[in-house]
Structure formats: C-alpha cells, structure tokens
Length: 261
Ligand SMILES: [Fe+2]
Image (cartoon, rainbow, N blue to C red; front, top):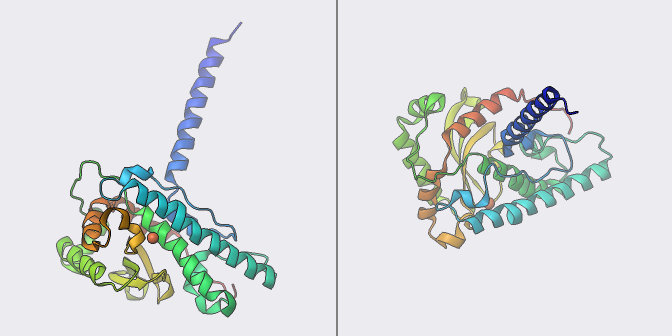
C-alpha cells in the first residue's frame, strides 16, 4: 500500500531540488569562469538561447560566434596552458585572469598564445554576460549605483552613450570597447579600447564591466560591413542589471597575485 504522505513529501522534495538546480545553473554567468584555477577551461554556456538576441543579433551569428570563434579560443588557450605547465612541471594552475594581468611573467614561448587565445576566452565570457534578450525593443538605461556613477563620471547617460559609441565607431580594425573600473583612480569609470584580443586586464588595473565586440564576426552575417548598425543594435541588448552584478562580482573576488605563476 502506498503511503500517500510519503509520496507527497517526496514530490515536494523533488520539486524543491529541481527548482534549486535550475536556479544554480541559471546563476552561473560566463564571467565566473575566468577566475577558475584550471588548465582545462570549458566554453561557458550562454545565459540565453542563440535565437534570443534577435532581431538585434541574429541566431546564426550568435551560434557561430559562440561555438566557432569562442570555442576555438578556448581550445587553443587550454592547449597553450597545458603545454606550458607540462614543460615547467607546474602543479597548480593560475587563473586566466592572472595570466592576462601579468603577461610579462608568461614565458616568451607561450605569451602570444596566452594573450590572443586567453584574451579571446575572457573577452567573450564578459561580452556574453552583459547582454540579454529584449523582445519588446525597450529603451534601456542604467539604474542603481551604476547609473549614479555614470552620471558622476560622464555627466549623464546620454553623454556616456555618445562617447562610448564614438569610440566603437572609430576603433581601427578589430577589437573591443570597454567600460571599466580604474582601480588606480579610486574605481572611477573609464572608457577604453583594445585591439585584436587584448584585454583591459593587461594594462594597469582596469576591471571591465561592459564590453562590445567590434570584430566583424560579431555582426557580419546581418549587417555586413555596417558597424554603426551593429553598435546601435547592441545598445538594445545591454543588460544594466547584469553590468551592475558584474561590477559587484569584481568587488568580491578579493584578488591577490602570486609572486610566481
Ligand atoms: Fe568575438
């Protein structure tokens, strides 16, 4: 005879477990992978489906960008780290975040591979993290502390948006435009540009909290060479809550550097 009470308890437990699992999985953002200590990084799942950034970024572009370009950087970065660690008999891996910040400590033989592929891995993890679907094409503006700080450091959001857009349109070749916290300036917000797969983590101590990918692979299928349309569309996808969460996440990292990698 089935104990109805026990069945109800089990169903309740199962429901709670499933909900908890969904919450845990959904909460892991791509940027959280960059402070792992491993020589075998995984390609982070996106916090949305490939089609969900339509109509601003088309499904095919997002899919190829993630499973093609981002995956290739991940694979090549892991290969470089593993070869270096094997050769140097390293017993504990560094964070890719640390390696980019202290590229001068990476042996010459592996520096370019770490810079290009490690940068490609980290940059894309950050890029995916600060966008979210916007099916109603809402106008989005920062609120909360990030909104206050943008007003303080750039006058107002409109000024900031104009400055950021100007940098995105004037960047020569392929690269990224960033909004960063400059730790050397009391966490003042600054806009910066990087070429190729360079990272703001390489120069000084800038913590990136917003980024647009200006490589043509980010928009070529839909917009061909029309970068201004890509930038205009990208603003629709910026998730200011995610930006603020990333800003808070950096504060919690308690980042320390090792004397030796
Ligand atoms: Fe990209």
